[in-house]
Image (cartoon, rainbow, N blue to C red; front, side, top):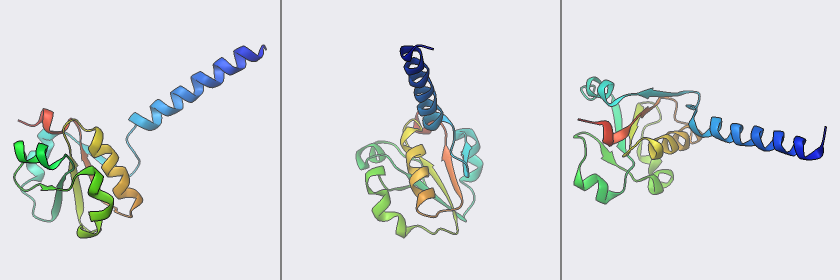
Length: 122
């Protein structure tokens, strides 16, 4: 096998690995839709976190959600209970996925990411 073929195979494998890591849900993080969120909002034993910027949050947010922007989450996570479920939303689902992974690394056990974010909430 030529060395260029080996390099090409390794590059494709690396790209595939990166895509899988980026888009496959992290083990231990539940995924729900904004439609499923509506029934969760009635439950009082949960923590609802919106990780968008304060400006985005002020322009439109869901009642019951607390704003802790993604950039502040690591510093402010100690304000949340690790015992209660944390439901995380953003605008499209990308930042909430990152936030969910941060919470998991910080030792939170019950994390739910809201797929599609505010852009799919009606």
